[in-house]
Length: 404
Image (cartoon, rainbow, N blue to C red; front, side, top):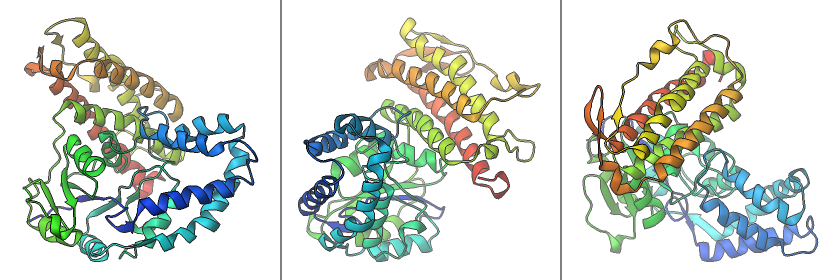
């Protein structure tokens, strides 16, 4: 029944790859401890390594990638620079990490499932917890013996690019934002109830819980379960409406707003500055669109969020923001400067919204155009505005003529 192209998020460990973490993780930590001892003689650097790994799990800042968080915590504690440490880590993942493949095995049904999805033309993402470098995660994807190599997936999440980790719903929102908010069905497929299923469902995504054959549970239109080999049949039997995302909750709305800032930072880091100034067919360039997002965040979104703290039943005035640019955008600053301005205002907006209890998100307000409303509807409108413009930015940067 599913006709439109869908976006399928696939967990890695024990979903695509049999990986007994009770054996794999101790072997990994022993190996990296032995390897790094040559670079960091003396001291309990593994305590710092493990602490830095834990700090990544709770990062809530869209202006810092997980790699930024890890190195920001780890390096000061071992009194070593990134330039001195990184060559040793690169060699570890290149020379020793491949030996850990013997502790893994292809997951039954994974190769057939990925082949089915690839033949259907769906967008495929390896949505593994991004707590390791891309070099390590791409190797594990290839160990799974799939119909696709790691480089063939549309996205493989890793700590250099991503800002949030499971079970934060913003992790899943960041995937979709980085992809340019693809329209159509979205399904998360994974084996962990909290990290894969509950957190994705909190964002408003459909899910499929991978369990053993004996543990198969009744499914629903939006949430199925069973062995991985059963996913293609379950997926094929769902309508596009069954699997459409629904971001109408306070947690989902906050996750969408966090993801915009995070994904834009990655896109700015990864794309040559000239691509941001390309204007396709008289539409706004990506840089002009980012200027618009910054202006709206500072002059509209932040002020609306603050109004819910300042008064009961606030009155929200509609603003025709397109009129601001009737005479053009003028001289544009560097994209990094515009991003910084947007990031500062967005983080303030998120701080304000996070301070409002979930039960207060339904308190009444009035909009000059929409009439009766509440904070949840206003936040969903903010997120929808983000999605529209991030979709445009991503499409422009991805186009051949943009240079992206």
